Amino acid sequence: KAYASYDPFMSSIIRPVRAHVSFKDVAGIQDVKEELEEIVDFLKNPARYKRYGITLPKGVLLVGPPGVGKTMIAKAVAGEASVPFFYQSGATFVQIYVGMGAKRVKELFSQAKAHAPSIIFIDEIDAVGRARGGMRNDERESTLNQLLTEMDGFEDSSGVIVIAATNKIDIIDEALLRSGRFDRRIFISLPDKNDRLEIIKAYMRNKPTEINLEELANMSVGFSGAALATFVNEAAINALRRGSTILELADFVAVRQKVLMGKKKVLSFSDEEKKIQALYQAAKALCAYWFEIDFDKISIVNDRLKDMDREIESKTQMLSRIKVYLAGMVATKLAYNEKFTNATEDLSRATAIAKEMVEVYGMGEKLIPYESDVLLILENSQAELEHFLEGMNTILTKISDELYSVESISKVRLKAIIDEVL
Ligand code: ADP
Image (cartoon, rainbow, N blue to C red; front, side, top):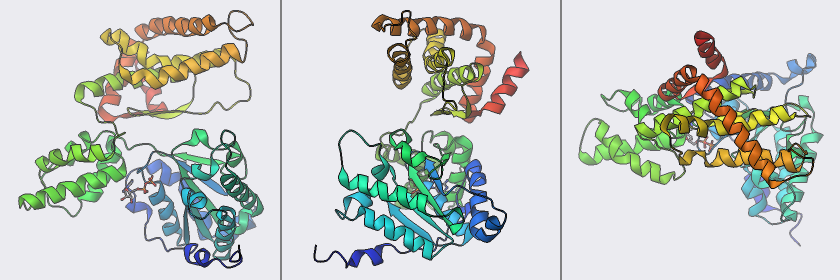
């Protein structure tokens, strides 16, 4: 307590760096770069924006799994705009110095303002911004409250942009997502085949090889950008050990498993598995389109259905969401007369919606909730889907083939396929 006013760590820790990363260093994720272009422009010249009274988001939340380049792209924004970059990790806010979280947040913002225009980057913001409730944690709450206060306190025109990253948006406190805080959200998913190829090209640039790099993209489904960097590096080490002057396919084959093991959760499909998964996701994409559940892009490894952009949702709309989640299972059952383990998460999502319909909104057969109503909703949806997907078989196959070969499909492209057939 005696040292409360003197904090030897504070000034040494909260110090900006110059980011020597630019957009061209970040391979792939073209759409993300485009979204951030405006922020770069603002940071280059905040006064001009101020003059025109243009307001920009103060906070941008980058959402995506580890290693997809969230930190890298945030740094690149700073690099592109040549502004100081303040890095803080949400976990260290609340873990390292007990009783200091709030103070550090305050210091961070005051430093950033003093160096404006500048960027604050908060990695793993979920460590601070986890939804309240459940186990109380005073340290985290006071840190979070300070963060909310700071975000509300500074002017749009102050020239400070706060970028935060998380891989778990569903546990983030609503308060942080409210307007004027992190109200711009940018999703970054695992790279699809084209993006993997771009990243591989970047890391193979100075490495002698005769391999067709597309083959490497094919054998790295589910790898993040970080995993791909490791993949190339490990292969180079392998080649060096063999005494070879060039990297050969065998070097990549030899280290692939090791890279996968290092990233336990990463998906790696055999050809057969990839076919099944492509059909599974294709059915979801088709249903999302058909039943008007919004999305930009659905890939072989994940889907990102947009949040319902409405206060009131109808029973029909809720049923549509259920259908999207059941679609993959129904489609693979129709095609293979078999069920697969890739359905688990979607089934529980569908069940959760059905339960909510019955228990919260009285949308079951009777107003009073019956357990059997949940089952009925799920079974009826399944039956409808069987009928629907059978009728759509030609289209479904086309979408599935496309997902199999390029691994992701945009809503626009999906519409084109449907229009072509119908
Ligand atoms: P995240 O913050 O999403 O966990 P990082 O930005 O820390 O991911 O990425 C870790 C490393 O992986 C980067 O430093 C970079 O070497 C590599 N990497 C990730 N994505 C890309 C990409 N799109 N292009 C080039 N390198 C990438």
